[in-house]
Image (cartoon, rainbow, N blue to C red; front, side):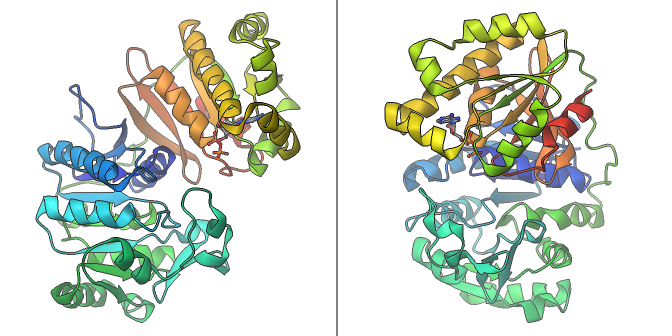
Amino acid sequence: MSVLLGCIADDFTGATDLASFLVQSGMRTVQLIGTPTDFVDLSNVDAVVIALKSRTLPSQQAIAQSIEALEWLKVLNCEQYYFKYCSTFDSTAKGNIGPVTDALLDNLQENFTVLCPSLPVNGRTVYKGNLFVNDELLSESGMRNHPLTPMKDANLMRVMASQSSGDVGLVPFEVVSQGAKNVKKALLELAKMHRYAVVDALSNDDLHTIGEACANLKLLTGGSGLSVGLAKNFVDKGLFEIRHNSAQLSNVKGDVVVLSGSCSVMTQKQVARFKESFLSMKISPLDLKSGKSSVANALAWFEKNRNVGALMFYATDTPENIRFAQEQLGAREASELIENFMAELVSSLDERGVTKFIVAGGETSGAVVKALNPKMLKIGSSIAPGVPLAEMVGDSPKLVALKSGNFGDELFFEKALEVMQ
Ligand code: ADP
């Protein structure tokens, strides 16, 4: 049986988030890091998510990368394609959600698709075309100050119209609440005059309704939430059976290491909690710069303690200490020192037989995955919403849990450890 759903995600942890939802809906899912250049064995795979890093690239580059990914997926002859972006519609005035969706539609020779970033489980809802983050409009939430993609307008019709070609309509909540048939009718009507339809969604049930109504659209766009109803569509078309063991990964033996480069509030709590029960080594950019800390020291410490149990290396620090390091070194160099350290350390740990890595931080995860260079990630069961256990498929299998910033609760590292053992 062939791959049914071909997805393109505009960043790495967003791809993992979508893959995790697909697995929960019963689809066997793999995540690819960029568009592959070599052969990838996709037997027994129902959905593929290609993770790009295109969210804040210049639009032309984002389009080129996305079309390259789509062309690769089209060879698989997928039943449906999915462009995944952030549930807070992260984009600049120029894109890239608009320009990339325009290009994907053109390439597929399609005229119409939906925009559905809603993810109620994480507090993102859309009402009358306006995006809310918990109780606040997007434009009044912390997203208005985002350093790369400040979101100053919550009205998605306006935002999309300003960065894409074609008119943007709305399927309002009143229609969504009347069920899939009515949503489908509304979409058919809108498609006569519009290229895009923002669809209101306040609950998970709404996402199932919208998913059902979109069964025959070739391209879907949204956050990870819109994916929840798609497996059932494939079942209804007789193409697929829900896989209750869709999350099955290899049984991997070996040591576990925690690597934390995130400084988010939640990660600080997780690090503090984990330190109470496990040995850890703190890394700071200033110590790396002065030579007081090094990969060689870290490896010596690891060899001395590896028999004690899981070990943690962490750069996680308070905002005051981070600011101090950034003042001394510059923000970019401080980050690079930590990320290069994590990448080099992880390669050496891999050589020493460590097979399980729990990683905190989106950028940190990117650096670790790049260093380990897997062919693909096979997605397993969920450890926390949006954070699955995953298997790196390559020369030798490894298990990873890759967590961005504020994901997971205080016991996340312990939970990840438990599911890995
Ligand atoms: P998050 O997902 O929480 O944003 P990231 O890994 O994406 O985490 O980003 C955290 C960034 O902060 C990384 O680039 C990391 O190298 C950097 N960093 C981590 N610890 C420190 C520190 N002690 N001082 C300065 N920068 C740090």
